[in-house]
Image (cartoon, rainbow, N blue to C red; front, side, top):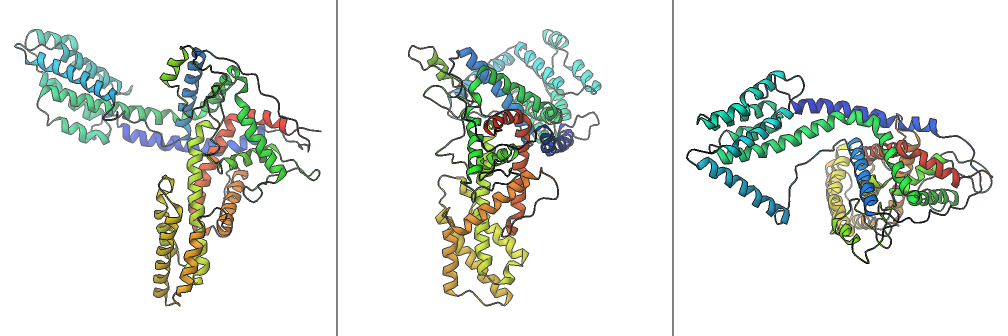
Length: 545
């Protein structure tokens, strides 16, 4: 089926478009920091601080304003997701088995197909429903065609001519099986190669009603394929427009809710305070051209922004969640969508009155920052375990690339479930200690080196188990060096070659660089969109004398 020259191979086209789009996305984001630097005004910040301005007074909003704002946020979030997430895919809707919605859907569908079965079982058969289904299938097949597929379009229009089909039905000359055969053949022509197997199975269904039902099921999957192909195709063009689009939508939200930047102001203000007071010098590296004036040098705006992004990688999501999007008086929600029961309550006496929205500039990337934070935490544990192990083992052990890679893989596997609530780091490190000692002993024996003594094994296991504590010196060293590398990479503007990896991180260099690329790409895109707002806020925080 895939060899037909008229076949619009959406899978192959999608792959080609995807590679082009991902390259365009990467090039645009990689150049963002350079473009950003041109827009940032240089100057020596002063050592004096302006008191944080009071937020705008709360303004009551109507349900209509609430819904309008929610729609704008949803559209902005979708465009952002398509551009930032190269793996973004639309997936078929799968309703939970025991849900009310699925039960209602199954009942309605059963009633429809039962009605079709009754009509086709009549003598003579009634084809009213069947002809309507053929018309829907015709429109769906036409929607899959590209402008250049005129021959396929003519075939569909000719064979699935509804007027002709109605005449044949009225005269008792309609062969519904022949129509179904043509439809299946055309589906095989226009579908992506990934759907060839599903289309092939349709030929084995002989009864008309189950066949039509299966045809619509496969067509639904083909619609999803076409939608993903369209998303891949528009991503390069959307990248060019998304910065202006997101900034425009955010400005609209800001005009409706003037105090929407309060959380962002607090976030940047804390970063500036931390840099000047050097409270977290060991935990979060602070570099980047601070002006030398007085005992407490004032950092420049770029350094404050970079430091603020690094703070998001150390965020305590349990005690201090990201700033929420919606902030009604006395209530908060992490869900950017408005729940129907809440809207229903708005119309009741005594329902809570919504005041202002709190719309943060980093909300849409919260999940990504959390994922990066988890990856860095696992990387810190991994790096600490490897550093302890290679420090205690014979010098020849760490120089063996195969063994080092094997040991790293073992530890990574045992840390795989670190994101689960049921995961206990101490128990995992106990297992890791046993496994590491076993592997090291085996490697020493193969190399003809002096084996580990029982005392050495006990010390190594103890040091590995100590990594469970955030205050463990080895863990703190690895954590600090990772953040130093990320800060250097961020300050370098994503230019090649990459900054030198600090000592002790060699065994995890590959994983660290992968995380760094994701982090910097995410930060640079956020800067491209929201740098005017950050500059305006920092111009009030970092003021001249």
